[in-house]
Length: 335
Image 1 (spheres, rainbow, N blue to C red):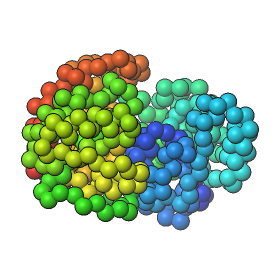
Image 2 (image 1 turned 90 degrees about the horizontal axis):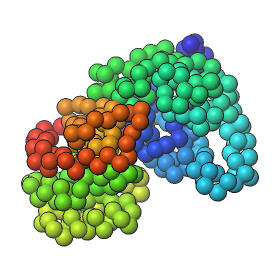
Image 3 (image 1 turned 180 degrees about the vertical axis):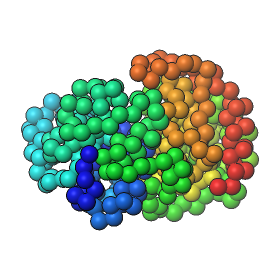
Image 4 (image 1 turned 30 degrees about the horizontal axis):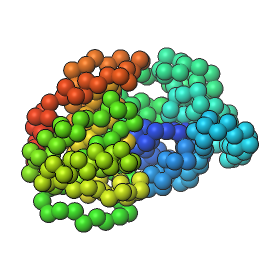
């Protein structure tokens, strides 16, 4: 592994997606604890850079637009991206937290001192050929613990479960919202796949049963229509405003509870130490780190994380009453 006293400049690679970047950001505070003088830089997809601008303990953000390159087959942009990565400067250590071939290539373009998951620890085993050194950890392990391990391992320290439980909030709060008196619940109704979305009629039932103001978080036109339906059929719900990522972090941080699907905005609650309930159907609780105030509720289906079934709509079978029970308990938790 790399000698501790030689580490002065570190690059972290996590290109996407929002929830994964949120979970990955936990490593920053622990790096700074052990390497207070180190320069920590992060390479990410351009669309997700705004949330990292609010991250504590991060010195520099570099962006790439790989999605745009793939979509447009823009070879000029590809050439410029490669040149950009190759000219970021010398790093003592480059850690790929994503473990995909694309992220491994990005890491290797930045420099030669690369570290990542070994071939048995990631879904795309060929990624390991781009690393100088590797770490071994089961793919079934919580993504939060995997992120923590692949960073701490080459840096010569450990991040225990107790340290994760006792973490500081990961992002700064830059915006103030005037929320309702009493309890405020943020309901995240969207997700990247339709099968990860809790049915609108179930959300209506949950909101109507809570002694709180429920703010319906939406991010696109389809989710806005869903949100309008929920508000029209309940008396204690409000449409949340359309928000930037920075505003979303602040809004969620100021709520008492977040209920939502397995998606980035829901995971922000965990990052900010806000009580939350994450609803799982085609994915499972591997996607979070459960705590006394972070609850995973799963549909009856079995999930094979090596072969996710995006057509698994079993989340429809998760009873609203189960969500309501846990929501009431967490609203009384008093974190």
